[in-house]
Image 1: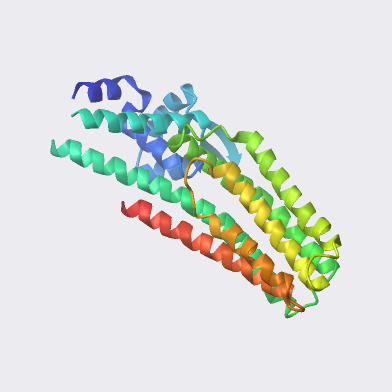
Image 2 (image 1 turned 30 degrees about the vertical axis):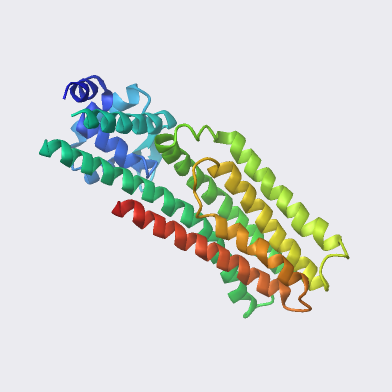
Length: 98
Length: 205
């Protein structure tokens, strides 16, 4: 159980909501904030705080786009995609030790 | 222990869905060009598509197709970054090489082969040989550049079928171009079907 606990504790994606955000973004590339919020059933404040943490690590980019009106878009970065894959592999490996 | 097993299952399902998304994106690229090709045949039965109209049609298709291909490419690159870290780092270098492969294919297929009088038994056969060579060279190169080392075989029918059809069109007195178009469409259809099958297999694993 130790490697698993260590991994989830020390990684930005150890938080299940952040991991869910990355996994939802991975095949889609870019999404509007409101669509991501609706899909993951999160409050705007909650999603915003997780996105800020992911933006700080360079896993996502957040910027304004003009849809029906100015909207916030969230885009996964190459680094974010790479790190998500890496994390999934590490998670699998850690699960094997349990 | 039950929780761990459940978490493993969830991870496997998530990975399967992401891999499936990649397969569907690849299928979309081929489905787009398949649509462009077949709509051309449909329009040819209604309006005269020779000369200017044909150039406008294919020019328009390329103008729509390139941004679409770039978008698909970007998404595939990210999926690749996540699941095939070793086989990656394609980036702009590979995109430029693929563009070069298509340019090389079109020069050989549309200029060099049609100008060689020793090719084919008729001008129609010559142009069809060129068309099939163009598709075979371009897609084979694209396959080698994008999937080398990853064992993605879905693209194989899209260049193998046109290559195998070259000896057949070579000896066609008439109707070679139309038949070559159908061969390309068949190759692309099998590729699309194979990608969709792989996507379902990835989801069901």
